[in-house]
Length: 515
Image 1 (cartoon, rainbow, N blue to C red):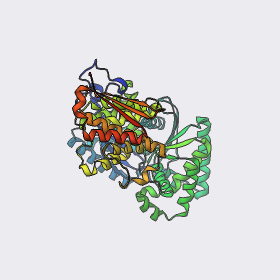
Image 2 (cartoon, rainbow, N blue to C red):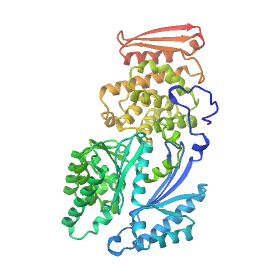
Image 3 (tube, rainbow, N blue to C red):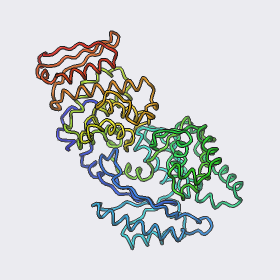
Image 4 (cartoon, one colour):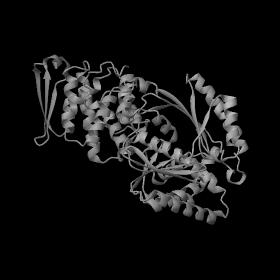
């Protein structure tokens, strides 16, 4: 699985894989502990550094910041639970072969009078050093986490924790102005004056944040557990079929409708329907009031939920610029092909072969064609009767950065049709409607083109022949070299005809040209 075996090789539109460069290999397995006001979490990243997989992910709801506004100290019960959790995490890291854990603490620990004592206890009992960061640094790391999933993104990142809320602007891959506030729901719960006092505090604080950050009408990126819980409830309200929080989109109108939905429903019943923890659900009614205020003031043109935040930002912090600038989707697909495909490298040959069908497509669509070709064979170990469904499920629900939900469905449908002519009867029909009929047909064309091209499988540098697509005449021309003639048997011919039928075209085949 050597991504750098031939530095002089022409990698074409795929770019040279970086997952095996020394700097990328150093990030192949990284452990991060996030000591927040509400939860303490261990995340171990693995795989392609630019689009890492979550090798291990564990969260303990400790509520360190509960009661902090009144006592000035960490919640004693939460402090004991957090220390126990970090001790466990340290032992797990040893078992995973991690040299060290990188641990950061945010608002609760930095504001509590006994925060330094807690850090000393952790160091003495576990050997883990906690780095306490200030609010603007927390905002910067959260924004970098968003950039891990959206290279070149622009807009406003809003990260809510238990005791604070941070804002950071991003533009063309750079983090700009950033501010911190005390709008965390744990802290707001302790505000005097009940709902009226809390609303006044939220409004006053948001007015100040708006004055500091200025006009921010681009995309609003939501980072944090309370925002993700609200997104789950919005999915429940809408009956949305794809339960993937990352890149889930909302609007200001949807936020207002979901706030009303929360107010009108029994919280315990809603919690169970949405799979939200009790401790998180307690904070949702407060968090939604904050979100309504953020949306009302900044008026974003759309809202995107980010599963990436401070932990991913810490990984991004360690990346060289040349790795940061890579496409996370393509890097993840290159890594998957190298690790799991039967013939690593054939994806590029397949891409070059079928590209005449998509030469006029928008670059964003061509990017999905690249991804599909790289992934076309990585699920070969699945049972043949379920291979198509496995491909679709992996594409739509896998931890892949840089993919909108509609793009997940397009990619999934293409890979489904790589193994199956028809998409009916798969159990995924409710997801197909996330893309329009034209895109469904384009995904089918891509899948059937890969299904046929895979029949010409020889080696990654083989001459598969050429396809010529004449859309005005509705003609598909196939020209094969003499070396490929034995491969064009009955099954290959049937698959080529199936592709032609989907294109509503006539086929023209020439076999035996000199290779």
